Length: 72
Image: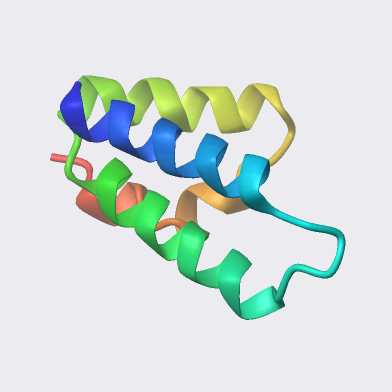
């Protein structure tokens, strides 16, 4: 649960700090940090995150964030 909380905190912090002229590289770094923390969550948490992406019609993000390959 700590890793999920950290991933959420990173995403909120990034969105809050993001200016209109934010750099694309900063977005990529934030997504990589979020993905790394999501990959460390328990399988049931990863499954819940993957289901959330499916419900949002964004299943491609499951693979892009490396969640499926780390699903125990």
